Image (cartoon, rainbow, N blue to C red; front, side, top):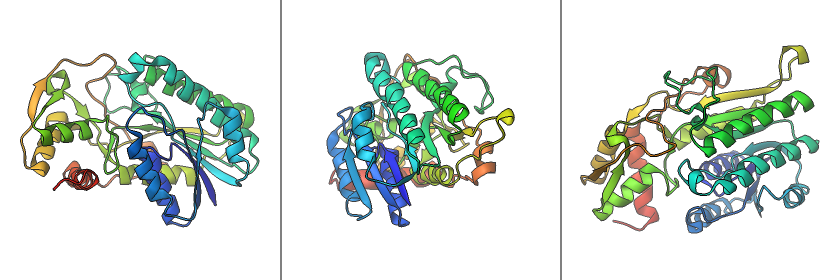
Length: 328
């Protein structure tokens, strides 16, 4: 079976593509390889993927519909896993147009591609826990209102869910949205706290601890996330009778076990054998103090059960980080 994976050079896209290749699938990877963070990391991920004969890369911007259509045309694509997006809450404050291009125009283009490709029978796509904004009720559950986003990034992700609902309604296209919570692990993103903290601690530089350390995150290890992503892709929602709804599901995908930021830093310090120099700062604009996932829906529908604790996952990230940077 052929899967189209957008954002294949990205963190989750790389691991998802690798898992599919290892089980014998064909993967068409789409990625623009932009410079939001160091493209060298993206090329290193792609070098691992291209070791598999079943992987094909198309360097395409999903906001370019003509190029996207041309890249997909030679392949009999059965399923789409759409993970490409402009990421980052804080970056959206500085560069709003990048989010409109990738997360709005790009998402519509992927919906159009899925709609007009006869062989496609389902698409899973990336949403975000950021859609919950300033909701006070924890853990976050899919039946809560999410109409008060606190960043443009969050607003674009909620817009993706709304547009997907429309396409599922009009064209009966099976779609699954995944509200990712804080994902970490080997080959992770350099703009995420785990990487930033590790780099600073090893260099003897201070780490920025926002909200004076009073933060909780649903840290979820990458291997657990990929298992959930592929489960939803392999089992698209069935099409109910029009009067009963649409073939569109939205799930939280997280660890259901929020950790104190200071606790995460403690595990990092232990894994690195070095204490962090901490610079305590107020909450950043657009950020929220806590994210916690209710994962009952994806667990019931797809058997998703995260297994990796931060005590297990953080040392694996540190091991990879040191190997990647050739550190002793």
